[in-house]
Length: 553
Picture 1: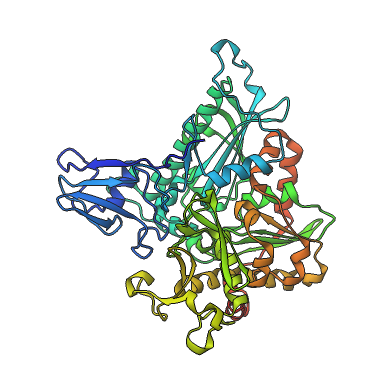
Picture 2 (picture 1 turned 30 degrees about the vertical axis):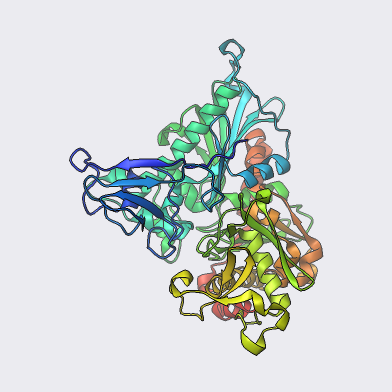
């Protein structure tokens, strides 16, 4: 596996005279989106608040600028991406020999936790060796807001014979589903093909087409007979080219609940005969939850199922009765909108702990630390709380209030480094060059408060307490890597559930594989979705009070 950067450095020259898509009112970000140029991260969706979409302009001036705020001009030259691996935040992905972009940490997780044998062929099969029967080859996909993973499956053996995973290219429209709903609603009346919805659909279909074509060629196959797709409701709307605009306003009702077969050719998906998309329960509890629960939940055990991503989806129940909800946790736990936040990749601080009088840490790749990924952020909060560096309100202490052993860790930062925060400009050293600010802590409190309050609502609606729970299930890549003791310490879930917690890896991806292979599994997913009652937290009595209460430690 190479250590190359996912987004190679690109030098772009803009010519307004020959480019009909572009005007002098177009921003650099809009230009890159419309021309399929990857490499710009925009967790805030291009609102100018996260500061992470920096590119270098080399002509007519030389300066690092925010792509979302800078207008282009004729003859402008821009550098997007990095030339080589430098250990910086942008080094979040690697490139495999076959060209598939793969998150280093996530790919290890896929290979380790998918519940089937994975057989990767090193070389392309000869044309004469290709399997002639299309019925022998299946595919499955989990389209996440942040990450997409796709599998090619041999129907006869049930083996996964090839895998691809990587970043969702729609990230250029924002790190969370709300940003993408907003982007999809902003259609270009003069050029429908370049509206947000059309561009995001093109991005995900092009990614899947490329991956499926690569995997078929790699494994000597010709076509996929059945393609199984799991994803949250917004991602599935974008895949099918259906506007998710209604999900951005009350009563948040989707235009499509899926749970049926589609013709892949209708969206330009090639080399697939049929496609099934897992049923959604609501606008914000989607087919990824249905797929994951179908794959992992024992119907005889009272299970609390958590998928702690940007949407904070969760469900509680057993047998033929489940309640579910989704919380607006945002992308903070995935490192987005955190000053030194980053994906779980080379250079990320992924674990933090106390050792005597010192804060200790580990770094992915044993490289120099350049930022904090989600698991590191949760550990850091737990450590700051235990050390008495922050109080129960999440405030960084100073002066005499701060334990003398840890006073050297707290320092003041310049106003611009706190993204114009209204909080006191205090921060805490975690590792050399890596720190967590007061504003970061507030954003993490909002995320953890939303999840904890959602859990409390499920307990109330189901009529049970934490003591009644048999299993606490963490799904998804993030849930697989967080330290459960740290998560309990900051109040992400009730302390009583710590000994009942288990991780199930990419449950949605596994469920998609099962449904591709088995009609029985597919029918079980349909049954689960029919047995789930969705609770809309936006209108739930006293939810805001519960939310505020759970923000504290």
